[in-house]
Image (cartoon, rainbow, N blue to C red):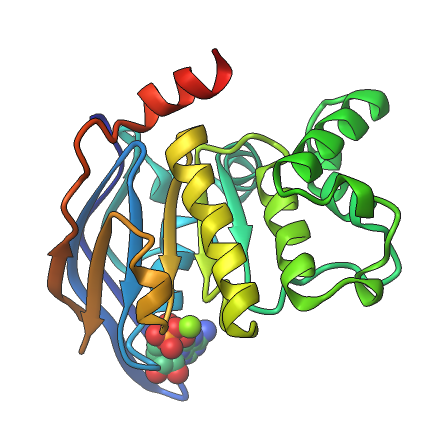
Length: 245
Ligand code: ADP
Ligand code: MG
């Protein structure tokens, strides 16, 4: 399948109080359309840094990041913000929902950056809430929802604009086992039935088992790549076609 992201010889060095800290060194990674990558590694190994580079939230200090062949690193800040809003959905460990807004309004929020009219924004948000199984909670505020439900609202917010890639930073890190399993089952179904490409950082080996590939980051480099066997006929596009048939 076509590569959606290519990371070529990427390095990231932070300048900190006159000292420079090399966090990533000569990273090379290809992510194909429909892939589901779990990125693991010790705390402080640069996992969040790498996700931020993939999602265009930060720039590499060496090398290139290509999105469908287009150089993300050479865009202006304005172009980058527009690009992110069209192509990337972010999911964070602590959900980052607005406490004063209902689930529906939270999901609608990033759509304010699009040219959609109010009615279309509401429709898209309702469809996204339906996909995560929370259409009946549309008018609940985050404080009226469990942690697992809040994370599913955050996932609805991430998919509402129909992005190509979901970037998830420890999406189950704050959840108990059963809520974590629900969130992972949802991410796996977005990957397998809706063709979403997913890159997820996790510390949880059980969560990582939902991915198609497990990649380990250690001491600035991608140390081990464990390819999970792709099940026979497990083509996300075929699954997507079946789902909509
Ligand atoms: P992980 O997500 O794997 O725990 P991070 O990517 O958050 O690791 O951080 C990797 C290293 O980079 C850490 O040593 C951290 O202190 C450092 N770091 C992260 N962000 C910054 C920053 N904005 N400025 C300086 N150092 C940073
Ligand atoms: Mg991190």
